[in-house]
Length: 508
Image (tube, rainbow, N blue to C red; front, side, top):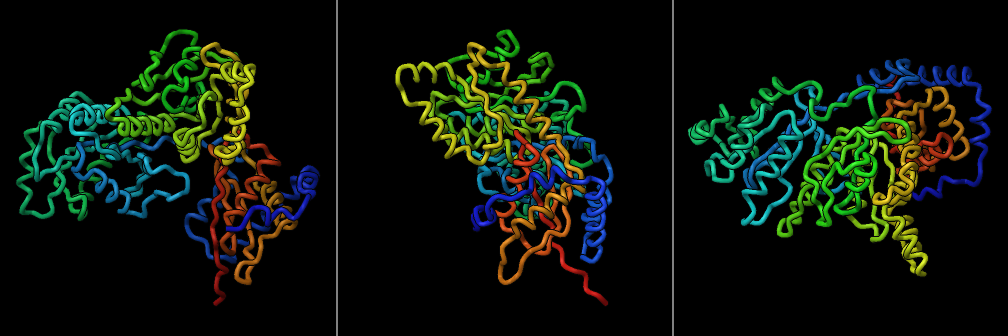
């Protein structure tokens, strides 16, 4: 992969040229570039994107929260096979992106032109001793966080005591529950599915997740009751901005929420991972109301530590669905861990704005006074482990004493303003034209990919689309991203740059 340095080419006058820009002229030039795209093969999606360019140039895009379908059931009943089957039905909207954790539990899926979030609760196997309790706890979370629940049972084994445990919980919910009788590979075995009527959850849906049998009928039925917009992860328009407070167990998330709320709102215990429920709290900070979501995961049981991490990941994904900006709390008295980085990567994957809160700063100052070298080590860790989020605002706080909590507000406001920021099409194309003139893309295989036209397709996070004649190196895309940040800020928000490689239309 080419290094970004390859595109540097020394200092340039990009900032000055953009400052001198005649915006009317830039819009006219962009319209000409847009017109020249007609010589290229465009698909329906391209046409829809380009047709919408004049809409809401100054506005903010509010994308409704996708409805959530959760898959629950004990281990080895075929939950993951069902997830794969549903995702593979159309090209799975699952990206194999470096840094995206394998523990990811929320996927974007599509059926009959309906998009939804699919939550897989089957990513781990608890030990046999705690299985009933664990599966029930996992199901409880899924019920809380979903609009529709798919309860998977191994029809060939029949309902077990663990299944009965989950059924009791499911009977109490008023959400739609589908009883999925899995491993019915052919019509001969269908009577096994019928036997599950006695669970009292209504009609069993006989399916074979491995072979795909019956899955289409199941999804058709789900679509009839699935809401258009999630009732669980609703994105209200207006009202207090929604902040998720994230971090690994015991970094001080609950202390931060309590300090902000000015009361003991969340049980704080030295035992890591004591918070069990996500708590939505309206608090006043910096003269404004904010909705804080505290999601500390779930009680960590020593013999189920792997499961507890999985629960925390499940809750984190759910919190991010609801939030607009995430505050990731890091404990400066401890080295930055792989788990810290994984949580930050979940935020990046969700496309939410990001603020890093370095907690227990008073302990760092005390260590400094004693001549310790924790601060020096921390700076090195930040440089090594958090280089990919160097654009995120950093706030040094002490959640326990409330020190510098007031600095959190400007950081949140800056991140949200960046998340909502839009660059007009004329200005963006002028930026791309100037950038490419100063730093052209290197030749690849004797050819030089050209950027034909660019536009900002959306906000929250800022998403740009480049129509090109060839594939742009990842290093070059990162270079474009970095220069965008240098000129337009975008502090506290991820930036997405998508490419559409298009070929010139053949003349008849």
